[in-house]
Image 1 (tube, rainbow, N blue to C red):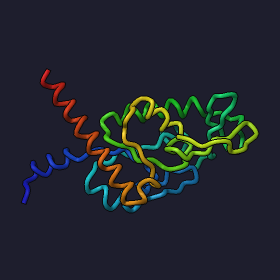
Image 2 (cartoon, helix red, strand yellow):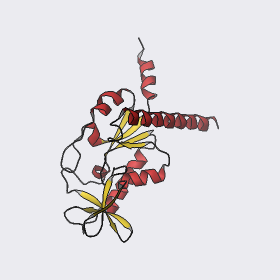
Image 3 (cartoon, rainbow, N blue to C red):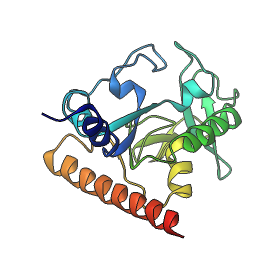
Image 4 (cartoon, one colour):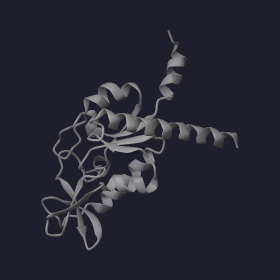
Length: 190
């Protein structure tokens, strides 16, 4: 049986994954709901440390809150209220996204909520000025994160639906974790 110090060392050796809070069962979505994913909560939690994140909560939008969407206007991507596209939320959410990013500098991967205007990975609807869906892409936080951290392992809960998706993502996370630890150790030797 392992002693307490050995257990603490094992605990520290786990990769760190930042995860959309709603996927962990926290009721932080605009409608006050959560979208818990049992595989993340029941299985992945045994092998990784979690950093719950929610850029919209960090922005102070509250729960419940009016839903937001991404809107492309004259080549510029904005975050607006669904019910009133003249109500812009871009600056506030962008500042929150940068704050969240600063808080996950030691993370080895990121699991985000699909289709979210802040956290979607590739399938977030983007609307034109007339309110029609014109494209899809990454949410604002995901765009900021990937621009700042190229090669960072990022996936949404839909990408984790298959065993192949889970295994592929975990391989990326463990590789990233090993590189981060190696670089940290190498920096300490200088």
